Length: 243
Image 1 (tube, helix red, strand yellow):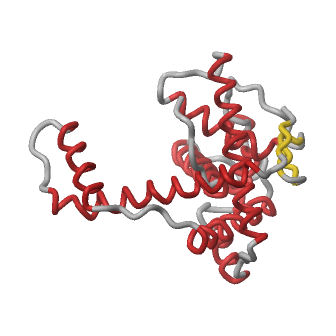
Image 2 (cartoon, helix red, strand yellow):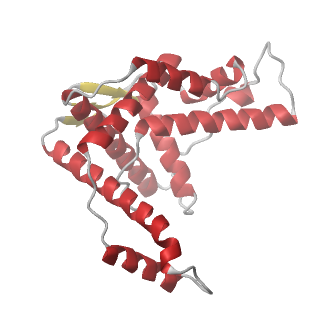
Image 3 (spheres, rainbow, N blue to C red):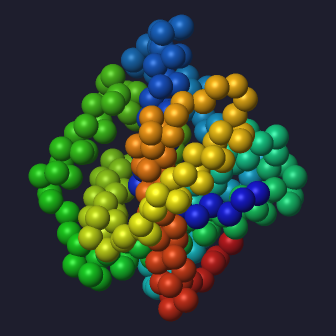
């Protein structure tokens, strides 16, 4: 399994909650649910082959800051789903260990970035935070569906707001502290040729694809720059894994 260089943890949470919301909408469309009671089959956690810690268990401590099972389990489940698309299952001990290592790596990396951002003075505009929070809640048709999604993930509304806060801090840090390597014309042409070589049939001309290739390479370089920064922070960090 390839090493995951970057995952914005707050975004992971939002995607997961959004997915839960979509699932609930699909279930509601096919068979309406009485508002007084939500069936256990809806709120039960999705099946997993992973040996997950309890939600309140401390999983890892990063520079004295505890990260608990709720966060770890969210990331680990997403990684489990990801490797499943490659035909790998977490009932294989080796795959399960890889998922565990990557989940810890992702969580530690993101926490180090947030800690560095806060140390450098990055703050959150509270009005923007409240607007993002309302936008998130409005993704759900009603409060019941939102509560079902929260039940499935183990997160609370306060957890959601904290994750949004960290997302905004991360975005500020990315804009002001991270600069990816410049993309050269040679880089663009090399990437285009790689696309041509791997594609059967007729392909668009270089000039047509150039803006899309440029954006892709700039994104890659930015992710690499974040990864490099995380590696620098990790060298000086005090990380204690508890699982």
